[in-house]
Image (cartoon, one colour):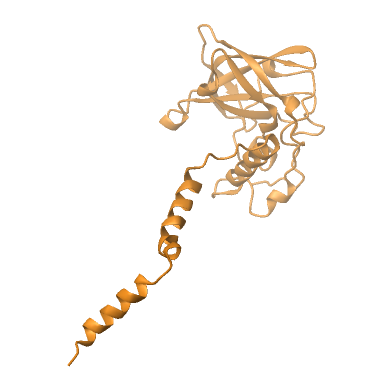
Length: 227
């Protein structure tokens, strides 16, 4: 009596043997295609897409968590100037000499200790302007080691933008060979623009610009929350 298992094995072998060669290699070709797709260089984002992505991440950070100022759905009231390459400039960095820690007041009345890190001199419309970068001395965690803070005011405050000032975060590692890309399209509102209950630093007088910088986040269009 013939061995059925052996017979089945023979049939399987013959079926595979007559399979077209290109079909045998199809799984291999598919694997190679996936591998090349994964290793292919990522196409750089366009300027407008980069700013849009940055703003999306900022919005998520403003909404997530119990201590954050906005609730899901409030993002509809966030407004921004259109991204403009004119307001992405190359700034000259000058490190602070013998910086001294000082107390920067906040709109809640609390005091926060900061230290000047250096200044950024940047061109705009044929003129040069200067803004100071600060290091928050109360942020001692390792994740904030490279964090720098630039609170400022300009002629848009109280008009198109929040009256209390405007903020920009950068890193020490953004400074290369004495220069840094200063992108005002990434300027954002203090959380005090949306709600009470936050210690928002008041921009020092040295960081008050007389010109308007219509870039970054505008005034919040929703109802400001109170505690």
